[in-house]
Amino acid sequence: MHTQFQLARQHAADLRARADAHRLAAEVKSPVELRTRVGWTLVEVGLRLAATPKPAVA
Image (cartoon, one colour):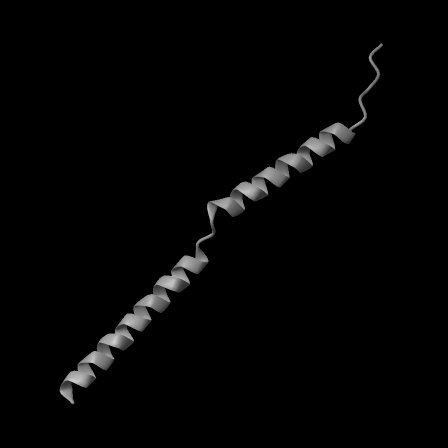
C-alpha cells in the first residue's frame, strides 16, 4: 500500500510538472509569428510609399 501511495504521489508530481511546462511553452510566441508581422508591416509601408503621389519637378 505504501508503494502505491509513493507511485501515485510521483505520478501527480510528474503531471503537474508537465502541465507547467506546457503552459510555459504555450505562452512563448514563436519567432515565425514575429517574422510574419514584420514582413506584413514592410509590405504595408511599401504600398503606402508606392501610393503616395509624387510632386512634379519643375
